[in-house]
Image (spheres, rainbow, N blue to C red):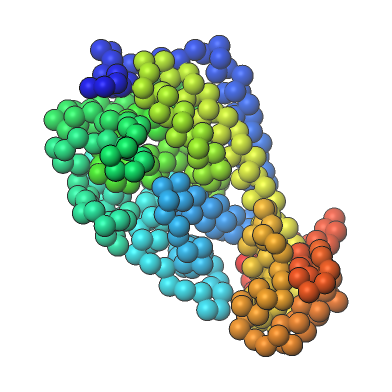
Length: 394
């Protein structure tokens, strides 16, 4: 072969790393995650499902987008709302088999955490990912390991391809997967749980056991191990979802692929990969904390406007703005966007927006013909928490 891959090292897969380099970032990741767990422990119980919905939605969209698969956010919200018994917004579309399959995998990955991860489980997850058939035009084996053909990750035009990675030969795959799954079930006694998750992510991607979907499966396995790392919390379901990393990896996708390629072309010193992974765990905990903030603010927002009497169109506009938090609705809500969302005349849409401004629900952020609006956040110090049966809490 033209290059020496990590799995060709004589002592593969005996990973090694520099603990002195990782001590500080490991401590930072632990602290950030602990801070998030404390916030989850003190969260109003009526908001637990809303937080799970928001985090699960981000993670499912993120893990698909890393691979270039753009899911319909409305379908994702619809499927999650049904699964969590949350109210469905009017006109919410039914979820596709692709969306349902991915959510099946993500939810199963972070449930029944005491159970053993097996090849049968991985095959079932793979089948769920491709419940709608292959992502592309090429036929692939679904729910079964890849065939005997060489497995390479390439980019570039035909004839000028760049080889990023080549996986181990097929004839060694079953034995290598057995070793991986045994290690998952019985990791070294003193191995930190966060390092365990990072090592498993790299190890599975290096084995590349399926013809497609390996990245999504690797991140599902990582979610499982991160959830196992905080199994002692009293809010296990919530904490398991809050510790996902896919949305953060999407933000750093270029770096993700670069550090993986460097590591897979090197020796068994994986310090660089683990350092990057721990940094992303810290960032993910902070980002997911902002999602928790957004859910709390959204609930308090509706509570503060519980007597405003907004019509169905206005509620739809506000929910669209609220759903975009914590990042905010790109470009703000314009008259044209309001018409597109509510399917009404220009005059009706204008009256709806003007009434929302008058009630202090939105505020203008620009002037002229392209005027746009953003949410106006009231002060919440004395706001009571929303009741569980509040129809606007989503």
